[in-house]
Structure formats: C-alpha cells, structure tokens
Image 1 (cartoon, helix red, strand yellow):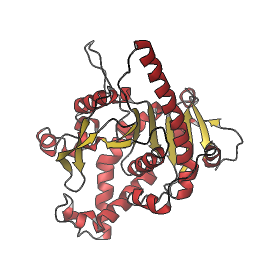
Image 2 (image 1 turned 135 degrees about the vertical axis):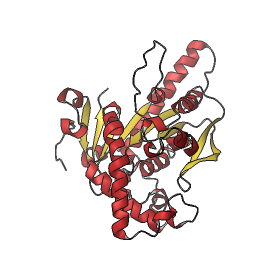
Image 3 (image 1 turned 30 degrees about the vertical axis):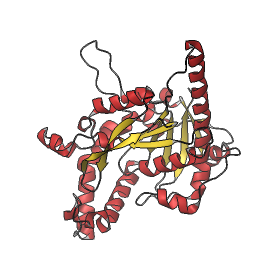
Image 4 (image 1 turned 60 degrees about the vertical axis):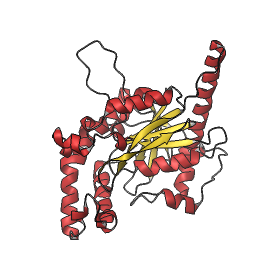
Length: 329
C-alpha cells in the first residue's frame, strides 16, 4: 500500500493503457481514499452486510468505511448536481420536467465481485436523505433466451456482447431516463440458467445501478450514417471493478466449488450434473470453462472497457479493494 501524501496519476500498467491515457486518472490508496469519507456516517450493520455478500466475496465493514462511504459521498454530490441541473432545465422550460433517475453503470469480469459491490453500494446510497430510492438492475435479464442462443449457435458465447439483446436494453434505459412512471426489465435465473417469464418493475427511483459484464462496451461502427446509441450513453457515472486475471480465475474456481455444494445440488439447477464431481474434476471443469469462455471474454471484450470508466476499483488477491482510480474529468 502506498504511503504517498497526495493522489498520484495512475500507473500505465494498471489499466493496460499508455501513459497519456492513464494520466486521465487520479490514484488513491485505501488510506487516501478513506480520508475522503469526511463525516459520512456508517449506517450499515454487520448483520446487514452479511446479507449483501456474494459467494466467496467476504467484504468487511472496514472496507465499507474505507471504500464505499467515500464513493457514496462522491456520488451523492454528483446526484445533487444532476438534480440541480434538472431544476435549471425546468425553470428554462417553465414547466416541471419528468423526473429522471441518476444511472450508474458498473462493469467487470465474471467472479470479480460486481454483484456484491452493487448491493453494498445500493445499501449505502439509499441511506442518503435526498435519494432514498435506489434500484439495482442486472443486464443478465437482457441476455437472449437459451432457445435463441441455441438457434444462433451462441450458447458457448453466453456473456459475450453478441449474446445480449442490446436493443431491448437500450429501450429500457431510454424509458428510464425519460422519467416514465414504470419501466420493466426481464429477469434471469441463475438456477435454470435462462431468462424467465417474470419482470422487475422500476418505479421512478432516485438512482438506478445497472450491473453487467459489458455495460461499457462500444459496438463496432456501422457502415451507415444512422445515429448510433450505446448502453453507456445513458449512464451518469460508471465504475469498473478490476483485478489481476489470475486472481479472478481462482475466485471463479472457488465459486464453482461453493456452488457445487449449494445451488448445483438442486435438481432443478441447469448445472446439477456438476454436483457429483470430485474436487479434482470440479477444478478441471471450472478452469476449462474459464479458459474457453470467461477468460476470453474478459481479455477480448471486458478489460478493454476499463479506460472508459469514471472510476476503477482495483482489488487484490484477497478480494479487498487496494486502489481507487478516479477520472480527472
């Protein structure tokens, strides 16, 4: 951990970018970032935090204090500024503009801890008095159904950009930012490994966290001159959760072991056939899936989007955030 007194620009190797690109970020170690909490109170108990933790992702209360409270303070300031700008627009128009939520995009690899970070962030943000309604939507629900993926030969590419119904996701976000009274999003079941016949209803929240693998992805340019919208166009703030690939791979393997003892044992689970694997077999299967699917997706599609994020959370091998990179502009 660094002992610098002031934030430094990010090292090039931390983002896989050149020096010119990395200079766009300010770098903070845990102590420096934690000091930016100021007087933000810790309103989350150990029992509440236990309910938010994911499989093998043991975030501690001290990390909530050092990482999430400063982040919630930053986001609270940005939400307030965005709300003030909306008021200015309403004054100019002479009419009350529809209430649009502040949308946060959160990206990162499979098994890097996005879900836990999203839930903890949701909990701490909802404790601010001026934006108590914070919703969380995962882009898993916008995956094409298995039947569609199978018809297109994409089952082995599940999680890759082409496996998502991006048009549907953009329509959802557009309605969200238009201030619609109700916006509906599909739901994905990790038990049956497919989109299910159910929806989550979002009713004019103050903040929405949109969590997914490829939310910062920019698709290849079209050959026409038609206007093109990206998912990230609808975000007010973006976060990328980062770690060394070797660490993420091991977290994936350990999560596979944990699921083998829990979710996989359910006869209705899509992965029930893995429940009886020995430790050696389970590790071999998990590593094979990582090398053929998740690792490839990380290297080819997810990691290249890190430099598009407003903020990067860099984790160490113990899952704890060691460094925070904040975009200067």
